Image (tube, rainbow, N blue to C red; front, top):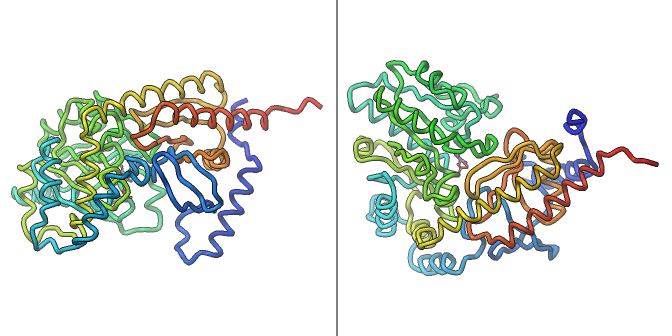
Length: 421
Ligand SMILES: *Cc1c(COP(=O)(O)O)cnc(C)c1O
């Protein structure tokens, strides 16, 4: 009876809603988040510890951020060492840590140059500006339109919501920057039909994260690269969530064997310290001359010291192979649950350690229920339970997480079954 399952509302949901409203009443923060009332005071590796002394298994990593888990000793040490010397300088000075981090990113990717910001949204803004300025410099300022995809997420700035494929995020924020068209992903003919003399670029996440952990597929990405070459467009990849080893390659586009012209990276790059980057080829980046773009904090000494320490870990031989291996273990456990609960688990998706399960119980309630089982996960669009564990996750952690998810599904199943009394 799948129809009934969709309307399931357990006790969990009521208590969770109460917590949220109690919290909202006390808080001086904008009410932009439905916050849980649990308060964490420390973290170590895969675990987070709450003020009431409970340990939680972290399978969300601050939404794909804490790559190395919590309080990784080498990253804490880099933060301390730099923190005692120098935190911030203006970008009017040479910052050796930023030079080094940029060079290492260039050495390990398609890119020739890097712009540092502090977040994913800023990386997107830089990418959009770079694409438009490139054609402006070529004397083709009319080439300023960007093709993006329905269901995509590119951050919450005005540019980000205009580029993103979620109309709900745009509502109430008009007027938005123009020049974006949205096509359903997967249909190369529809993309080609949308290309016109004003098109500058195609923007896509290799795996849609927020939208429901949907892999855009190697052949679609390859097709987009071909279209960009054929029609003189730039390919912009949003690897804010997929990058830095998350999918089992350093960058997710490596699976498809293609290269972008511009790429956005954030989330994992600082493993919890605010840092973002826009990477580009020399051809494109050389258009961004003094005066075209800037960031006060971007690439500051402290952020870059931490960024270099994170990169030391990620580039350690075997590290990304470990992600790929753990991704396969995760996928196996998800498929087991889909077999065991065919009414509750409808689909399993994703790549590496960026995976999701489309379930029938309302996703917010289910995430709350898992938290009661001391497992932290995050929701994604399309009623998907999204799992984004720190990349240091071990098989024993995955087994523990799936025991908890299995228990929660058994509970939901029992609540749904008619009582025989
Ligand atoms: C999180 C995310 C962003 C926005 O990053 P912020 O750091 O929140 O600004 C952009 N694109 C993708 C794919 C993301 O997952």
